[in-house]
Length: 278
Length: 260
Image 1 (tube, one colour):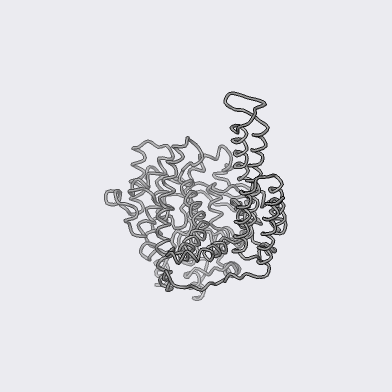
Image 2 (cartoon, rainbow over the protein chains, first blue to last red):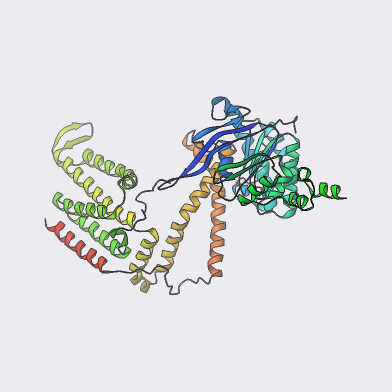
């Protein structure tokens, strides 16, 4: 990395959005408000159809909210002053490998940086750096055809395409879906590395264990409304709320509770748990 | 989603409930009569039939208008082309254009004829689900099977194509969003730049479509689809007394239109 990346602070104030259908508007987000500090990581949880993907696309600016606003470093993203900040938001779509299009891995990753108008040497440096970061060494994978890679490699290549633009806030939509355990582990490591570099993260997922391992804070959506926002509430109220929202407790939190231990100090990883129990 | 040109409006009106085959035959008959007859009086009869059918269909005017509007360009262009280039005694000339009363009358007639045709055709597509229409056409095409035309397979092709248009549109939207998130710009620049911006969109769309086609073919085979067999239908076409009435009325309208 060229110098430490500092994350973007994110805030939503009263954001509402609905999809236009043939005979009615279907509300997807209703009065969503929350704050995420620079360099913090947020797990976006909620049942299917609760509005997670829509929220990510509204934050990225692909859809304009009908009401409310998105703030990046306290600047309204929709304002002229927010244009540059908006470009520093990276969005990794669900199954992004379906969107690979170039004839080589390097060319695909270079698409974003070139759209930013960077000089060719800078583009090349960003591409190499991003490929290395996702564990696809450029000298080995740079010339490969994207469709000749395995599913897990394609997923990481698509992630590299977003990382090459050096986002200060990274939004990920279900990044772990349909990956084998080894690739999930590798992807989790990449996200931990980005977090350590100070990139702000928003991770929409159904996997509460990974959310617990990777994220400082949590935002639970139910039918487009925020039902919980902020640090994990590990008390009884938090547990009930998560279950009412079609989620479950993180495995390690559940274990700590059943062991009668203090859930406030529940471990984030199996290694931490083993250490505490030894 | 906005309705495309004359897109199906789900409903339960008298016109909706009629059999797709009867409606198709009626519309074809009216269209032929419309082009055989060349008087304003005949047009008025067919137009009245179209308007009555539309009113009975219960399709909201706003939906009809949105579906109908793009076709007005075609009508307008027809009118202009006829007015500017029709022969006749000119009352006003400008450069290579000559305006004549005969030309005006002819242009008005042709445009009105086109309007009535579009109206009658719209009633068919607005009130008949595309799948019912395909099934109806396959049934009407059955005699062609004696000539070894694979009508059922053709109908299946059309059905699959219709079924996957919305799916592909959703995928297209997703891909374009992903490219926009990476800084792609589809709205600016000249036509060449815009066409170039579409390459990163079309590549994954084609790859996805081929993959989908492959999977669908496998899934159909796994469920024992074999071309050339007699197939039963989930929604068999059923003609009733209403369809006989429709065809009878159509004959009356056609005769009236040709005779007035």
